Length: 127
Image (cartoon, rainbow, N blue to C red; front, side):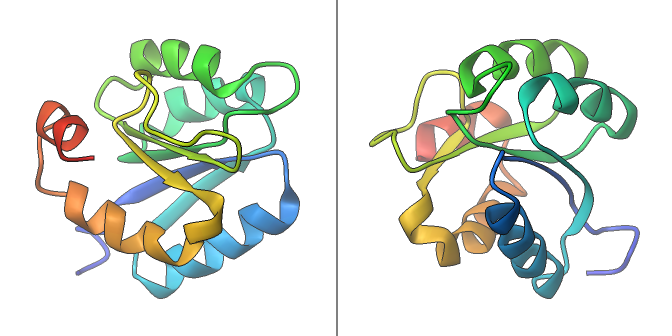
């Protein structure tokens, strides 16, 4: 994948260790992490500015949870595919295009790769 073809990612999680691990995984897999946010309120202006291809979104966060953040992100970055990345959810929530439990962190880059060529609707149906 050339630099112009690299898919962009916004990581939204209140745990700095999780954000760091995700950044390393994505950079190793040739994705471009455009920014990190510690909660939904911080993520919204970043998503508006960067228009990422993917938003990795935790569910339980201070100030604005994943559900409410996803609703707003759909308006400010409508092309972004939202991946619910949570330790407390046990299935894909209706506000996400895909879901992965934090216990399965090593599977996140392949999950995104599988979503790259799918339309948002097909991606949601596949996960």
